[in-house]
Image (cartoon, rainbow, N blue to C red; front, side, top):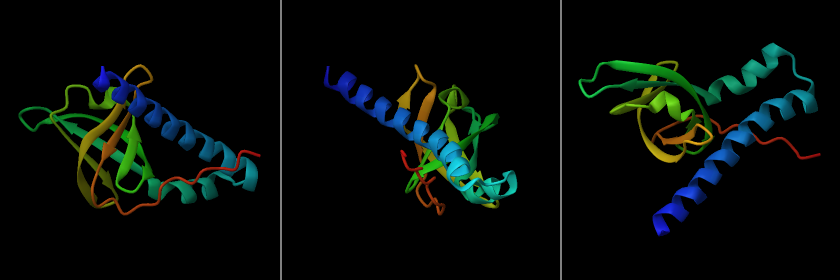
Length: 127
């Protein structure tokens, strides 16, 4: 029962982080009326590519992730399905990543990638 409660608490945290990322994009654009170029420039450092590999280390799939905290990225769980190894990349940086939190009902997962040198997406004001 403790494992289930922990998993639920973790899944709620992942959902909050993902929602915060969406709110950030919409909030930043509305609050500062950023054009698309400015929005891209602001968010680009925090958006990484997720690559997955099978048991034979062959490419399995690819998706995206957003930096949500130090060494933590949010992605869609379906991107990680059947993966035996996961890495995140940005520009020429490639880092090993591991699954840390998951909420498959919402298709949201959090990866841990030590060494991620990128800003977490900033939260927009509630007002």
